[in-house]
Length: 167
Length: 167
Image 1 (tube, chains in turn cyan, purple):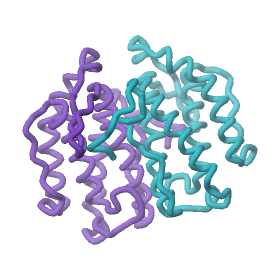
Image 2 (tube, rainbow over the protein chains, first blue to last red):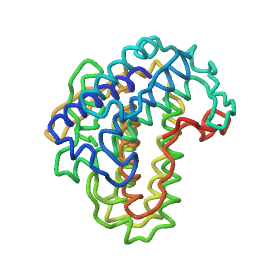
Image 3 (cartoon, rainbow over the protein chains, first blue to last red):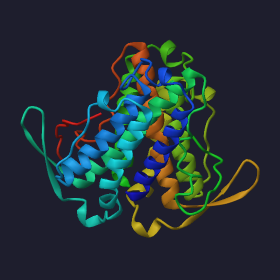
Image 4 (tube, rainbow over the protein chains, first blue to last red):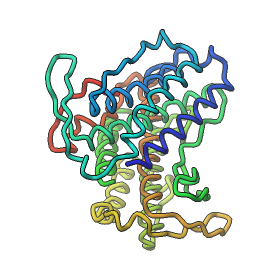
């Protein structure tokens, strides 16, 4: 579980760096699919991870600013760092005994829906990778090479190794 | 580990159904980003999963047909089923003792590169989700709703539950 979160955080950091070399206009240009804009996609990824883990599982009082309140790359990065520092200890403390614990999600319709922690955590992992896949298409539309999505070769397992059958 | 593979297989099946309602011309139209075409992306997802698990980890003699040999949706689905039946027993037999076992990958340059099984398995998981994210953008370009990428609500944990903070 932890490795896939680490992968996502590393990829997200790479995308923030990628964004720094792209004009704000491109980051806020409307595009087809997903959230429809590059920077709001990164905001959305952060907000969803934070909402499910800190708000949902940990039941911390959380405050998620609207995108319009933090509309710059720098502000989204700071938002990501703030959320990360609050949720990372839980992720790094993950163990199998947490798999089947239940959190209760209250839907917009007021319905209480139970979710095992393991389901929530994997939902969050898949959510980020999926949206990053969308960024990779938009990147090519701009004519820029996207951040690599390869998990192998990122040094997550101690060695920065090659990848002959990569993405 | 198993749940994320099950998620990918379920999502892949949903995309095959999605494809069945789209013209072959659309499935083979060149697009921006990733593999550049919808059907070859699904072929690529299957081939990479099969290559790493059956060829790499299990060291089975594997045969991966070129896309041109199986260029129809039906043939890609059959290819996926064939690969799945060969690799699924290994995935379902996954346990923590396999995490740090090492497979040796021989790169195109003839270099031997060691990878822990756990790294390979997570690479394969992230690989599929990433490419599916690309399909979701192309789907909107065609004007069609993509398959949901939500992990919550798929019944993977026994209950088909709602999702108030979904993708």
